[in-house]
Image (cartoon, rainbow over all chains, first blue to last red; front, side, top):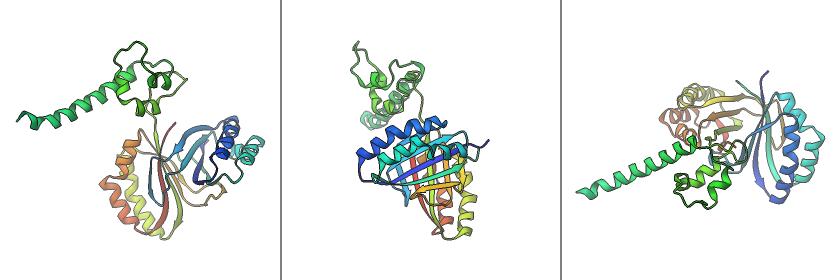
Length: 97
Length: 165
């Protein structure tokens, strides 16, 4: 089965404390669905319209597992903690390999 | 005339020190992970890893096996808008070989299945590299520059290169 990749590219962070509170809750919720963090830091390089902002890449056993993690109660609590703390692009994409 | 050799020798020496530190840190398990590299050396012994402690400690997997491993790097292209599919196709035909030649492995290349928050439902590419340096070198290669020429104004893209955990 093709893996699922969850890509979060932060556009801006307005409240770092909210992001930290979110991250504490999001980690366990993502790992509960088999999610593994591949990258979780500020981009080293950005090109074209790219932003040197926080970037998170997570791999899941499948796209369905990634969606299930997003829709879980645990992740819902993380989102509540984040509130308006950041503007983020989230995409879930199927792996090509 | 000896001094004219000095800068070259110094660069070679630095390169050797870096290489030696890397080799040693790969061979020798570092107990306790990143913290032990950053803390003062208790025995006062010379530790080559400390010469480049900062980049090394970033890449150490603290608290797991206690051994050193290079972290991977990820090149993430989140397309915002495609203006000209023909230019994009011309780009892709050149970019693929240039990226593969640079050691990149495509792990994602397609449209999202789902988007959330400010997520844009547009083409998304993730390429894995063995290091941040090889990812940047691939971006800056002549082969990739030719691909960029072919793309021109064909798409608006967000490209980020990020260190792996």
